[in-house]
Length: 452
Ligand code: NDP
Image (cartoon, rainbow, N blue to C red; front, side):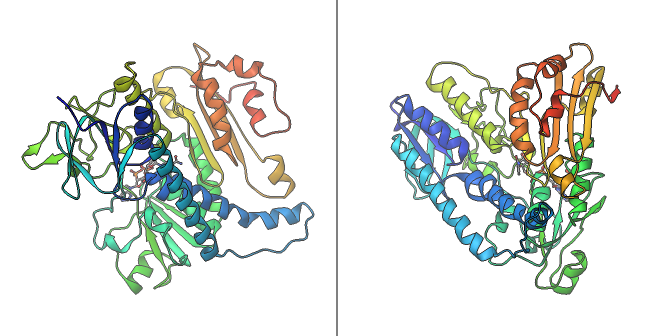
């Protein structure tokens, strides 16, 4: 049977764009539909604008630190309007880069919504139907408001980048990646931040010692963090000020947690019922290790599959899909030992097992040190960092590495290579320290702080 295209990709985010370009490079005829801006969550309303806001907010501490080092400089003030203009100009530039890369590799772009209507067919918003040998769903995730009265009054993370003015105060609900990163960013930009998290400690799933140190640092910076606390409803004006402690009516805003995978069924619901693509409890599309759904011609990658919701993972899944389907090399996606960073201040970088998870699996040794780094110690600041290794007592392999420090994201990327290669504690010890650095502690910790 002749198809209009070899591959139709639904979604122009990091995963979809990479898969489309790689497939086109093999000579395949490829089309891609994106109803919103090219680049998806990462480029338009996620990693990229977030990281630029991290940079912007980090300057707040610098005048004070510089004065401690002998500079005679005053505190400055932050101009959100000036930053926001530059931010959106940069996002426009990056969106253009993505679009040019796609078009340059021969992918036909449809700037409209597409939906799957049959195993080999998609329908565009304008009614056009396109047949495809393979269809890749890479529609990503989207924020989901919690089910509580007047939840529409709150902001979700996407809204932050579009604010005309920064609020004077904000209540952030949740304790995950976005909640903690945004708490630190907005606090750094001068917003009075209150954070409610329903659990016992923020950043559930990360190493307990590491997340405890991040919480301590966030409080020390002035974030009013309340654990075991949640909201049950939202209301406008005065009542809202009550809910958002310290908020001022008209100025306070509440940032709501983003939910999980987010309503994927709309993409795969055909008029005559489901096509055989299995949808999970959280709305995610179920796939196998090759990102293939129950319908052999339909694949799905990235956040819509709710496996590990990170940009580089979606890209890997897209590359594995292309190798499998277009290059004849069946390639399962490797989700083991994925390093990640939470861009709080200080950052949390992590790879492998937490101490808590490792304990469950067998005997371990824990090597950890928490100290005031040279830079902040000299400036008289209280900030501490953490370097921690979890080691298997039997094989001596480093099972996990957890770093809380400025630039921990940069450090964990490199440590992750060793951990992924199966390095032992002795391999770390054989490596000569780079002195004076914070990360040198990773290769100089001699005795375990505990065995478990
Ligand atoms: P997370 O799962 O990290 O956090 C969600 C938070 O919201 C949790 O603290 C959760 O609490 C809380 N929550 C969920 N529902 C409710 C509710 N009804 N009432 C109160 N609290 C609630 O997801 P995020 O939305 O922060 O981020 C989405 C994904 O995006 C992340 O999982 C990550 O994969 C990715 N991401 C990665 C970043 C990075 O790499 N630096 C940055 C930002 C996002 P509880 O813990 O109790 O469930």
